[in-house]
Image: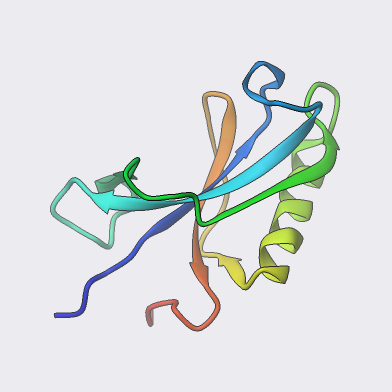
Length: 108
């Protein structure tokens, strides 16, 4: 069975967690911590892996629109060959979504 890779994009919107005033997006590889690789909740960030992608949006973290930031993050990721798989979910300090490299997306 081929190894399954899973990545999550983190769109950070909390100014206290940022090095600049605008929201940023980081893609991190995950590791399987549960039993079902088809469930996003069975994955967790693999801190031993380097970040796969990083970009700063032009959307202000304090007063900007999360929807605008999500759209821009998706555009920035697409330029680097990434696409979202599913919809964004709100978590503490960020929005997250599963992502895949163009061409690496498993058949649904």
